[in-house]
Image 1 (cartoon, rainbow, N blue to C red):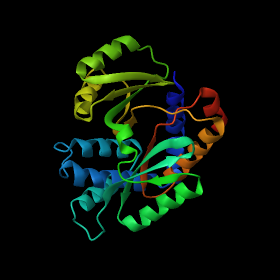
Image 2: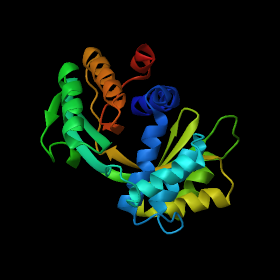
Image 3: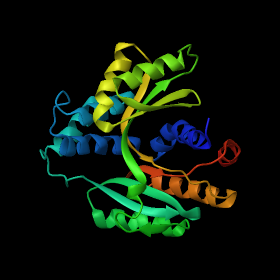
Image 4: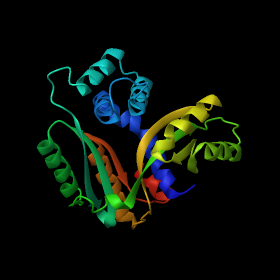
Length: 251
């Protein structure tokens, strides 16, 4: 298991609790609204991105009426300001590349908040395109391995046949990466075989990883957490790689 995977394990295990403190429903609602705007309409049967956003919202017990209001906002049926997806780029201590996905109704506010968080935590804002080339858009599916007797090799062959291009064991989870356009096909394969699918989403995967020294790595992790706590930030991607020992120390 790589240090990079260990970092993801921490982020996943802490994610729900942290985001409940950081207005989880607000982030989920914006996911739904953006999916309507960017994915092609308010029908989840015709808009796969919306289907994923709704599934994630329901998995976190978001009320149906809140989901519908988010869909209506994406369709422009109310008087609320439009939500748009904006990416910011920058660097954490140690030269770690940071790609920040936001959902905002006020670019000036979001820009100010992101730049302030970067500067206060020892990071640096980057120009558009300065780090995005270090990442590639992928589909990510997560299968729960807790108490599982799954044959990992068999699952790997099955999902590769369905269109996946990489599989990693990450603690008690199996992470399956594929081209974004293949996500639905791989997802359907997992569902048909009744595997415990716990997540299906778009992600930005780093092409290469960077492992800074301990001081810089801890500073980078603290910066990532500060960014994730911002109301307008949906996700933070990085090319940070750490050892299991350092991950445990941070945790």
